Each structure stands twice: as C-alpha cells, then as structure tokens.
Amino acid sequence: MGTIPAPLETFSASATDPILAWRTWTLAGSRDLGEVRLLPIAGDGKPWPVRDPARAACRRPPRHHIVPGFGCRCGLHATRAPAPLRRTRDPAVLGTVALWGRVVEHEHGYRGEFGYPQRLRLACYLCFWQWGVPGACEVVARRFGGRMVPLCGPHSELSLRYGFRVGRLLPAHHVEQALLSTYAVDVLRSVVPQR
Ligand SMILES: [Zn+2]
Ligand SMILES: [Zn+2]
Image (cartoon, rainbow, N blue to C red; front, side):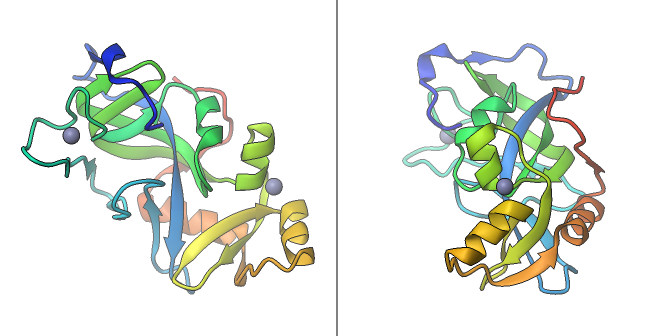
C-alpha cells in the first residue's frame, strides 16, 4: 500500500460495479465501546464514516484533480489479496472493502473514490506481521487517547511480561461485536478471498 510506482496504473473498467478488495485499518474507541471507529493506517487520520460511504479527497497542492488521480497517492487504498497487507504498520483490523465510483487499478490493488467495509475482523498485528494471519484475538489494549490494539493470548502475555504499557484491557469479542454492529457488517471468517 502506498509504495506503488505510478506508470503501471490503469483506469479500472469495472468501476461501475463495486470492486471487492482488501485493506487494514487502525481502531479507536470509547471506554464503554459506545463509539468504535475504523481509521486509516496512513493519511489524515479521519475516521471512516458509519453507515455512510467513505469518500476520497486529495490534499496534494497546488491544484485539484479528479480523485483518485493518476500518478497521485489519493483515493481509498485496497489490495487485490490480503498478503501484501502484512507489511502495513500496526494494523488493528483486517477486512474486505467495496470500492466504487472512479477506481484506479495498479499492480497490487486499487485506489477508489468511494468505499465501505464489507467484512471485518480484529487482527493481532504481531501475528499478522510474523505469519501473515491475523491471529485469534483475546484482548484489546485500549491506550490513552482511545487507540485500540487487539492482541492474541500469547502476544498479550508477552507484552505484559516485557513491561509494554498495554493500557486498559477489554475482551476482544466485545470490541469486535461493537465494531461489527457500528458499521453494520459481518465478521470476516476466512482470509481466503470471497467473491
Ligand atoms: Zn491526488
Ligand atoms: Zn498474536
């Protein structure tokens, strides 16, 4: 994501139908889980809207262009397969996303104008980074400021043992349920692409 050379881009011919692709997000939430939001890994950190499509914007000066633009980095990023997402920095959620409107296709995936998550699951970023699977999360560490870090059992134990300040621990299934009901989507059961 984000490291794709521009010359290989094409305008996707299937942009009239939504494209199903993969992406990761970070996660933030209130203590009581009354408010849980997906946030982009990179970019301006604005949460993805709830029950409303996310819409891409370009902030690159000096002049505006149609979003997403060729040779630019703007647009809602998603990959064709989950594997490349393993390299994203500290993901908290892995899922599928529908992209539509204007969609630019490149070597590893897409940059779309509109998007909405389809299936989501919490991801232990350490498992995902090490093995390419999101890991079965047991707890979510809620840090000061509301940033949420899902962890599997072994990795949460390891974090505690090495004195990593995990913050307040919440049961992962409560956080996942709050996330799914907030965005009104289903859980992602498998990391095999669903068509
Ligand atoms: Zn742009
Ligand atoms: Zn783990």
